[in-house]
Length: 408
Image (cartoon, rainbow, N blue to C red; front, top):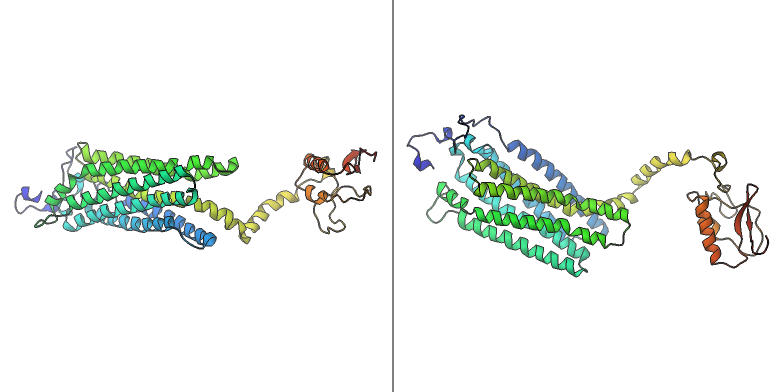
């Protein structure tokens, strides 16, 4: 580009493209993507890093070891942070604005080298975070043949697409022998646009597989509906990753094939969706650890017990008594012989001496069970007992144990 300019021209005062509106360039105060990259990048890095630390803590606490999917997720997070830092450096060096608000002098060999490094790192981190999910599903649900097949396909798809992208970038974007980092190598690098479209399509397909894969697995688990819904909500976070990937593909198509005078701005949006997809995938990969940490670790701590008792003790203390509420609960005994301090409801003390012990009274009659549940449980016990076993009968407002079959 500089070869077409008259000698002696100040490149710092010439824009890369003319403004379609005809307005003069605004090199210093025009719209910039730098604050967006800084804000969203730091936010996603903090959230994904915290989720990753929680994943490692939970894994070491339960299994006392880490697996391949854990290490791949860690590598993807670290490389993703480095890639984001390189991108922010590029934008900070004058490439964060619209093309017509960007100086020609901003295209330097240093910036071009950073851009090449950003592309190389992006391919590595994308593969690592997606492969971590494939290894996770195989480790946890590998006994299902179809899960293993899908995960192997996911690994082959991501590895082949990102490796081919790395090769294309090396061939087209690195200066040939005798060339310098400048307009010639930059122009040749832009001709590799079809490879970015191809890798974008593969990325969308991989994200769709990652999003859909958990749901048939959850449907086949032996869990109650509430637990299944909770797991489904966890993996629904992957829908955001799919949306981000689709938006990134759209921007790639715009930059590559649409006639636009603003490739820098659209290219910056491609980069934003790329690192958001990376950190979003890390969050999805670490989401199951959040549920495991809550159930298996946090709920076992004294802190949780204290909070739980404080929240629910007031509800138990204000529960009306049976006499005051008019409910047909049996009388409660705070201390029975042989069971001092027991809070269970006991049946009346006038019991017929049948020579048998009603061992189910303490186990089946608790303060959390209403009378209907007590009667139902008692009937179940009677069906497995001898005919002489007594059963509770209410007469004249009092409870008595009677064996109706023998006239008690």
